[in-house]
Length: 89
Length: 415
Image 1 (cartoon, rainbow over the protein chains, first blue to last red):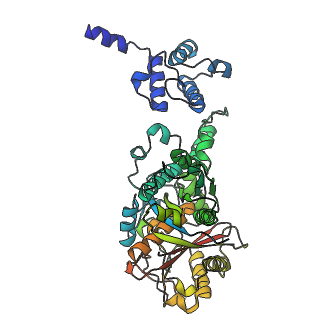
Image 2 (tube, helix red, strand yellow; image 1 turned 90 degrees about the horizontal axis):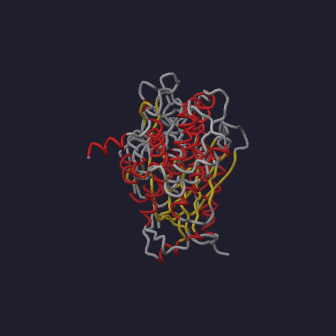
Image 3 (tube, helix red, strand yellow; image 1 turned 180 degrees about the vertical axis):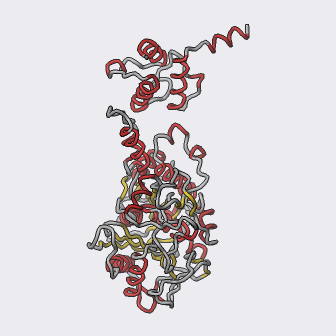
């Protein structure tokens, strides 16, 4: 059982793991807090400037351009991962 | 209306020769040079390859990493110095009227490194603007006073003064004025600078203003020495808690000294060169003495601007001789920039700490690297060469002059 769960935890996509790393780095939160449901502003302590910076970091890391109207819909860790999985090159 | 008295009740310092007030004094009183080869970037292609950097600074010991990364280094220095000064003052934030407590800070440049990084990043791209949202709030020079006020919840006057290398003396004079007018009770004042960057070193090299003694950095800053060849850039900051005298007494505060005068003037002469006869410097010191209602003979020690530039040093001495007459030869003079280097807008901050500690310890910190005194300087003048000196010190005058012809002088008095 132990190895099964460990495997599950590590079965994070490359994108998800990079997103998590960026969030930990920029917001100074613990990796365990960075769950798919976690909201940047409500759960992870980000203010409006922090979220702008996160979006910019995602753009840089994944070589995408996220239009403002799309960026507005990226409020949680999961939404960011989904968007990037669908749109990154 | 009678002016209120203003005293200093807390000190903080992070300097090239010590990261606390205690360490700073240890460096000052022992004649330690803060100069060494630049570590902040590879300076091998620059005319000047050394500077007086703050050493062993780990910001995360003072500020959580996620907050620190939203501050330029000059703001980090401001927070660290202010924190030491606030703790030293023993002020209880629960008991003071925070609406009557301000922050007036000095910085000549502000977030130079932040500006440089963002522009380099943009210039290296394809023209698509990707400026970080924290670029402007990190870079603007007033972010230092803003961040300090946020940390302590101080809601009184809040701004920075910019007058190049006179910036912090102007800040302290403003704080002094607001307190003696009764407008506020407390002010965190001081200054910080972090200009040891490619643009900072390159820019001052462009002016041919800095020492290029790369083979012996520790003797690069040598005010009044005949072989001086420019200033040595330093970084860091220092903070002073200024407090209305009765307010300080009422809470049983430790009082370092009184601030009794502030003088200001302008050379109205040249954007970088000092007035050849030191007229602006003369006026600034005269104005400070008048403000303090003091005679020149009452001054025991002058902490000079003395940057180690060929032009600046003798002009200030001329101005002192003009104003102080024969007393010039009986008081002590020194330039602590020989040890700290030149902290630009924060020079007045670290030198105010030096002046106050000189009163506290009754010791004049030395002018180090004085091997052969400039022959144009009267040998009767005591420049406190190379070794600190015990002396009865009641009154210290501290000068700061800046590019643009700004002059500002402070007078501290033993209480």
